[in-house]
Length: 353
Image (cartoon, rainbow, N blue to C red; front, top):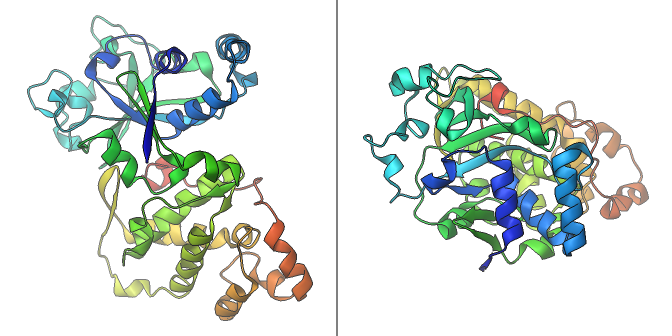
């Protein structure tokens, strides 16, 4: 069930992380890691004194602020928003094809400064185009440095319109991520607190894990590892089962069957055409994280039996097979390893992590 909160503290945070200008006047829907960070901070700093302490930390010494960091700010617009019309003055923020962005986008050269009189992004507080993909156009915020390293600094405008905040949250792959802000209201899935209280990453939408596309399933699995690492939480029981099945299904992929074909990834961000080389990179990275999977609370020792013939591919599997049963059983109570895990980034795989 989706619940809502209206509070001045929440709106202060939204205004604080966004650059000054007319961006809020465009009626954005903000979701993803930034709003999850806000939701968790709002619950943690639940008194006037605690909240004021957080505000002071963010303003003066953000590196010491007790708040989850986030890489970018994801912004959607609903399907009734005029920004999706070609004639809208800021339609270039969500234009679908990079080669059609024209001189407005091309004039957005990356850099730390700009001249607001001549720079097309100036009124919105944008510092330059970082990248344009099939999913989104990403820009550097002109004021991101004021809260570095809490915030990575990019504002990502998702090209795909949505029908409502509720529809957006229902499409999110994990319950733990289902938080959004729109027009002074914070929306959240009421199952989120129980998930975090039990230190579990739980599935919301099963679609990314039940599709026949290996590419989409691996994409979802890598996102799961990212959130597990960021918040030091285990995969929930259902997610653990899905991840195991994916390891089985990817243990011996015949890439020659694909030839030079392209693959299509479709997520809440929209569709993205990618290459087989990208799929290979994703699968290789997925296999390298098996050791982390074996440390999850709900990992079962019998999983290893289905993968034993491909032990060379899965990091940590050899060691796991060689352990006595008593040691393997002890893994049921372990928490995930959260150090030394490097997740794929948008600049490497051209996908929005």
